[in-house]
Image (cartoon, rainbow, N blue to C red; front, side):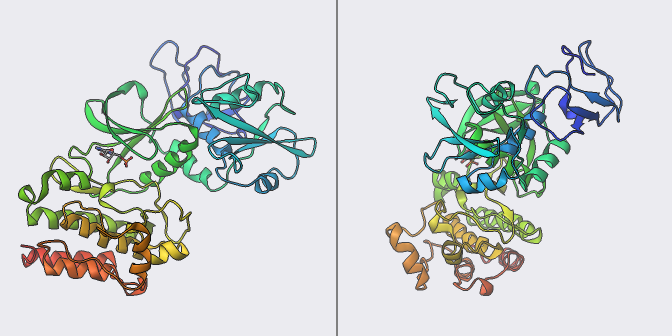
Length: 437
Ligand code: AMP
């Protein structure tokens, strides 16, 4: 039995029982020998079966388990199908379709499904507008203890399929870092999901992405679990993940001292950055993309804003949030139109070849020192013109051999576009023969 008052490091245990939300009685098994380092620690031997009799703190493993009841944007009907066959207390959370930004708690009770709107007000969440919670975790915890006005208390989460493997792998595979060792120093950027901070982890300078609130946790976990699978000198390296007690999530990556490539190019300009530097950036990104291509990963959001520059001027591809294993489809509404290939915009056909198109745009950004692509063309005219075969002019002073590569990347038929492997060979040739000067 795990006694209340003992510190238990949840990294060391995995659950045997089907996980509901940390109810007393949940069984778990010790995955490692743990002699304990303080009086409060409960020593355990690998394979020990332990029963939780109470949980005083939320911890990251529990948090990751718990995220699995969050099903994102699904409809009312889909939710009802997921909660079939009926089982009182079976529940899930989805994003509200009627009230964007709010959530809906769907609970099965006496063979019916009730849908409760969770309103998001002044940064807090509430169902009855009496009791407010900091995040979904706290709200769930409350209603697992007591129905408090709902048709039933929450008993069993309906787990999301698909994301389960990634999250399990993530918590099991040792990517969890110790919050106590991380010092957050200052904010260095704003991302789509929240602030990016510079920090110190065990004396090493690191970059930390901090989550805004629960809805985006899912996306963050997806991003982090993609990052655990990829390792290349030109990809921004994941160092680990931390989930705080209150449910905030941090993704810790290597620190890239010179910031985003687009800012780097704009702030220094052609007086400072030479042709060798431009071709090296192009080559660095190409190598990272060749690696993704070989591993069947599609980035989907390749652009100079998503490439970072290290202290020693190495370019590394970042932002794997949208990266999916090849050939899946996605919502086209939020796509960066000027970087996305015509077939991806039209038919959601994302592939390594659509990344090649974006790489051509990125090359144009590099050689124009960070200009926004398709200058002087209104955004709504870009796609119709590109579809008719329009291609941007070469940036000023761009070597012809590099412009030829851009144009090849912008071949309308994706099949005809070069692969990253071929592009890397062409760049190698250009470098070896000093054609970039
Ligand atoms: P993102 O959320 O990845 O788009 O990041 C937003 C901004 O934060 C970037 O444009 C960079 O300026 C900064 N940033 C992100 N990741 C890092 C990192 N690993 N090292 C240094 N700065 C970063």
